[in-house]
Structures are given as C-alpha cells and as structure tokens.
Length: 131
Image (tube, rainbow, N blue to C red; front, side, top):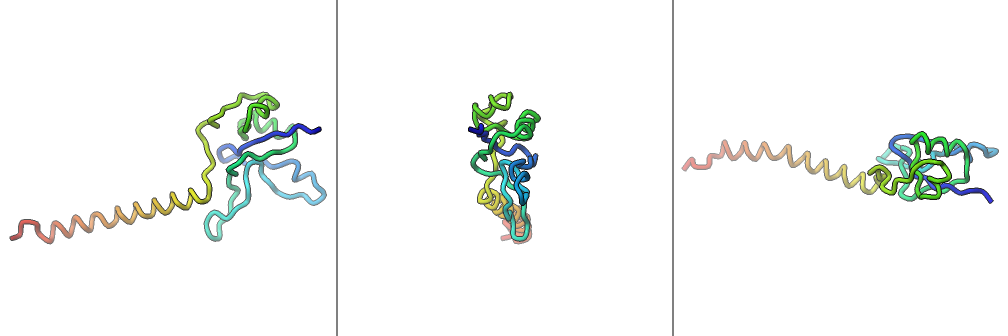
C-alpha cells in the first residue's frame, strides 16, 4: 500500500504534482493549489482550503524539506523528516470569497477617504459661525 501524504501550499511556491506529470497524457497541477479564476478574466494557482492528499514521491518530500510545502499533519511531517507546525507559520490560504470581500472593503475605504476631504472643504466654505 502506498504511503499517502497531505500538504498545503506554502507562500508563493508552486510545486508541480509529479503524479499528474507521469500519466500518459500529462497534466499541469500544483500540490495544494487549484487553477481558478480570481477576478473576471484573471486566473491563478490559488491555495486550496483543505490539504491535498497525494501518494508518496521523493520530489514532494524534498519540497517539504526545502520549505515549499506545509505538511498538513504529523504523519506527513514525520514521513518527510521535517517538523510539524500546526499553525503553518501563521499562513492560511485566503479563499476567493475572502479575497473579494477584502477587495470590496478596501474599495469602500478608499471611496470613504476620497469623500472625507470634500466634506471638510464644504464645512470650511459653508461657514460654521458665518451667522
């Protein structure tokens, strides 16, 4: 029985899935990432919310040891010979929903900041105390 390993993507590293490339019709896949449209017309390899489970491969073990993948559990970390960090270094993949919400909040804050000087200017011109 093959050893199953579980990984999260780490930082901006894109580790190719060797099992997908060893098939008769090779496919480009990255471990712990999926190809997804992040903004209309823009696609990217985004981190998955859940760890990706793959069969053992020495290239994946090397990627985990080099710091390009997060072992998702203690068994995977032990199989790779690297320490398990349950906080994953404070990294957590941002979902598309969270990304869009953050961008909407940033746009709202920018518009509020642009409108604020106009209000102050109107108060100064309108004349509080011009009685």
